Image (cartoon, rainbow, N blue to C red; front, side):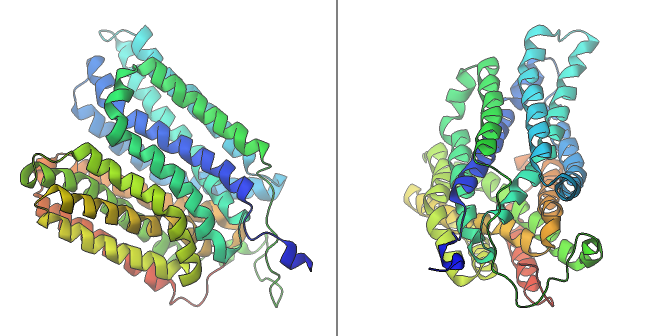
Length: 408
């Protein structure tokens, strides 16, 4: 057996270490979003401040994600590892996260010190941007390019389980109290960093050797970065995030008016459970079909389902739509990071990942600014905009296949 046959196609141990980080990220955002309004109003702030904070955090994230990803690329080239960025970011995030309830417990809502609370919240959100793009860009080191969706399916599985906690266990999480819950989230971040460090995050799979020498080198790769490539990655990030947010907001509104006796928490939780259960089969399918084809199919299906959900008239139909949402979104979620990595040189993986997350942050800002009040736009209009966002993302992904080349 030759060395290529003996080499694994996916470094599963490292992928699971990275999935621990993904799970910790998802869990802390679930906790933060559940407690955000409660903590602010408890401290004497108006409800509208929550929306303002989310807009500000996402605007800053839109800048910070590609900035931190690009800086981690430089650190990778200089010292041979991105883990410095990941470790520093996680330690900062953990410290700021546990400080959020501490300010509420030890601060005073009637003095100027109360403004420390939104300051710490913004600082935590910024600290999360320090390590997310550098960490998730490591996926490109852990699998052959053609097997990246299969590797990413583990991240999707873990993220789906964490995401299901909001609709299925939100009230239970709130009943635990902010101090205990944020402490668990803080230590989960630290534990994820330790898990990733334990599995040797610097290991890289042995990619098949190209027929000709690579034209991308550390000294000229900045000149090889294509603005159209980055634009397509950014556009896909905007479309996927905006479509998903609108779909998740509009579906319960439709259930409220058309199926008032439906168990909305169970149905919405079913979307995330379906994401988790179908993640691995979807990754296998994307590996066979090709990542772009699988993503385009998933985005077209998501657009269709977002339009069809306005016809929901009973709980059974709602459950079928929820399962279909989850299954098709697995194809999309598995493919996003591999898609971003394919559009930049290998030594700019952090930048490519950051550009995708920057697009998602812009979409979240738009959502918070325009659609945060559910009654501001009718469910049918919201569904149509969500479907259009998925279609736009599918167009950007499909267009990427018509460019002269990709990097993996």
